[in-house]
Each structure stands twice: as structure tokens, then as C-alpha cells.
Image 1: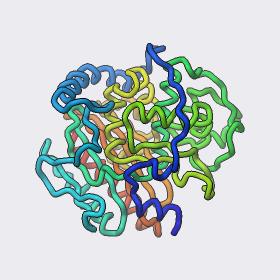
Image 2: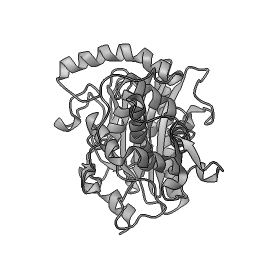
Image 3: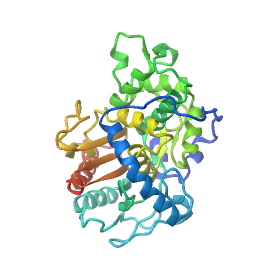
Length: 380
């Protein structure tokens, strides 16, 4: 059985089972914020949302008791419940994928449900979560508790740690780091094609966020330390999200089997927290949001937005789209936030499938685009 198949068939509930051990904890800077944070569309909207989000989060916290960074109780404490719609499908609860659909705004999500059901019937493993951005109400959910490989989405925890170390004075954003400080990698990215042998930390973060640059991500990971990234995720309350390793051309028996693991539920919650300025600090949230807003991969969920993938930071129709994708053989993942005049959502969709032909791949991509179309209907 191949490495990919083994991971795909065994959606672990805890990423620690896959990484086989926890890296050393790195100390984090304390106390005060050391800067004004990022400016731009995400930063401005994050600041605007923060006031309203704080009040609603406080109400939810008082009603629900103590919770994690998102203001909700620990998701592992009790199974998800629904407020109507279809029955829930769980891991091992049958061969048919049956996501729950809330009747929050009477949106049907019929296209998404059909596409995901077709994927599940073909043998793919599917995990999805859509939540209302302001209230956190469940809009669509199916097996969102499963821990699955998310590949390039592991850059998000890395960027959070980079932004936090910059904010707390532990990392100079203009520090120059050489590309040859880590092993060469010929995966996605543009730095390998550039003449510049070294770049500052801030530029490396832009490359990692905008172009999923493997070399830039590996250099940043070596600089801040994988133990610090893992510790940061634990500190903000993420139990199923873990960056296991850097990007590699070939994975040997002594390497981590995947770059990163997460669940659709945690990814959707994390992106909502970023846009609502609730990750580490408002300044860190704004900076991470600004980096992710540069992402150029709009071929999955983003295909339905008709945004320019190279210039979508400030859309004239009032749309905010912040996302990150992950791609590998047999794996597609997309998580982010989509907001428009009628509301906003955070979402995550992870699909692990048999990548046997272009038809299998197109079927997976069609599910992401169907979700994007339904999300556009929700916010416009």
C-alpha cells in the first residue's frame, strides 16, 4: 500500500498519531504588541469585525462556558448537533457521505451535496465545514472532525508563527535568509527560478502565501522552528492541526508521511478567527490575513468568484476572499473566508481520492467549484 493510500484510508482523529512524537516547545515572546499590524483590505475589515465579533463571542462564551480561541467549547467534548436538514454521516457510519445542512438562510447547497455525494460514492474521503462568519453558526458539515492531510495548508500555521515572532520582537522582518540554508526542493514556487540567492523574512512570507513557494516555506520553517509552530497551534487551541515537516521532493521512511494534517472543522474556525482578529493578537491576525489575501490559487473554490487571481485584494463589488489551498497526488484541500454584501462564511473542504486519471481529478475539482458557487449564492 502506498504512503498516500495508507493516509487516505485511515483518517486519524489526532495528528499526534501520525507524527509519532511532539517536537520541543519553543518559548514565545510575552506581553505587549510590538507594532501597528498590517494595513489593507483584510486588516481594515478585521478591525471592523473585531468589535462586533468580540461582543458576539462574549455572548457565546457566557452561554456555552469556557472555550478555545474561537469562543466555542472544545469541539471534542460533544458530538456536533444539527438544527434541521439531513442526517449526519460519520466516519464508519455507512458508505454514503451525508453532510448536515442547516437552514440558516434557506440556501440549498444542492450542487455541493450532489458533488460530494458523487465523490463519496466513487470511494473518495470527503470532509467539509461551512460556518457563518459572524455568528459561527453551522451552515454545512460533513465528517468535519476527521484529521486528514492538507499539504500546502500547513503554510497557514507557519505564517501565524512568523507573524507572531515578528510582532513580539523575536524575528526581524528584514532579516536576510539564504536559500541554500536548506535542502533544495523542486516543488511549487518561483524562488527556485529567481536569481536572488537570499531574501528577507517578509518577502519569504509573501512567496509562501501567494505562490505556495516550497523553498520559501522551508527556509521560514528552519528559521522559526517546527517546535515553535506546533507549540503555537496548541496555545491557540488547535488539537487536530499540525505542521509535521517541510516540503520534500521525495519522502523517505524516516520522514513524516505528510507535510501537514488538519480537520475541516478546525480550518474553517481558524480562518474565521484570522479575519475576526482573534488569532494571537489583532496585529498578528491582520498580518496573516494580508499575506493570505495574496494567494493566487483560485482554481478550486475561488473559481466561482470570478476574481482576478493576481489582483483580488480590493474587489470593487465589495467581496472579500481570503484562502489557502493544498495540493498533492490524490489530495485537494481549500480553506478560507468569503464575504459579500449579504454576509460572510468561513469554509474548508478536504478531498482525498484515487488519483488514477484526469477524470478522477476533474471530479474532485468540480466539487470545490460547486461549493464555491453555493457560497457565492450565500453571500450575494
